[in-house]
Amino acid sequence: MGRTSDKDVQAAFVEFRAKEDDKCLSVQCIYCQQIRAKNTSRQRAHLLECNAYLDAMKDVNPDNSIIREAATHVNGTPTPSKLPGARSFQIPQAPSIQVPKPGLERDFRMSVRVNPKISVGPSIWGQRDWVTFIDGHWNGRWGKGTVVPGGQDSQLVASDLSTHLEASYLLQTSDMPPAYITVKTDGWRTGTREVLEKLFDPDQADTVDPRTYLFRLYIRLETGDQRYLHVNTGMWIGSGMRRGAEVIYDAYRVT
Image 1: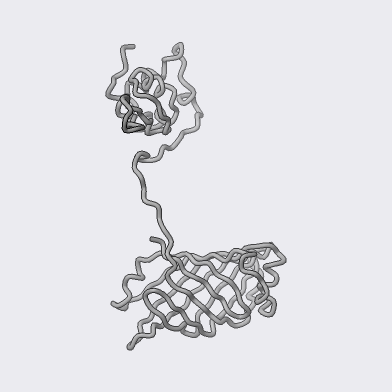
Image 2: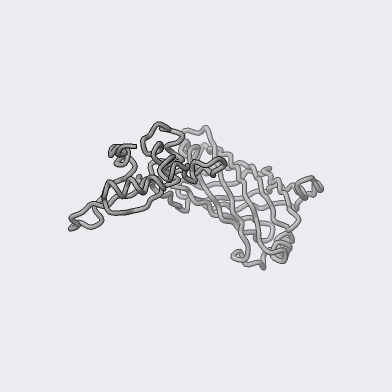
């Protein structure tokens, strides 16, 4: 067939100058990220063998001239990416765009006193336990206050003692009049069996180094109080520890 359209080739690459004093441009394939010197013939040869490009064009532009050439450019035999059963490669969208990285900022600390656990019994998922909250307090960059008595944590203990934690409780701010903020947390406490066994015993939990296990949470807050509406759209992750009958965690806001 005739020469492949240069337009199709150019559309598949991003041009850039590697160094300010470089006289020649470089190009990067936006489908596989490979970098090479700018040369239309070599760029076209690359696309004929780039499975990421061929798979993408097959779905969005099957009439593409490079697709047609790739199907027959080796003795009339389809290339590997066109063979039946070939694995499709999903390319990232706009790979040349720099997506901002999220950050973490320590936002507040929570301390809750809990009652002894109540065993609900074994389920098909593991041992189900129920823990209620006595009270607590919190302090952060945007406020402080207490934990209203009556919250609960539904725990699911796996055979290796890894524990899934799902809690729901209510905060009261120190304002006058106070605001009320609901808290929902979801996470896991994991570690070695020896360490986790101690954490189940309030008398021994105090002696466990929090660095020897992982206590991680997703945290969601909600309120209708106009003074604290900003918490409704916040995202937090928490790192916690068990100290006797007290649970403490720091909440880090995702920025």
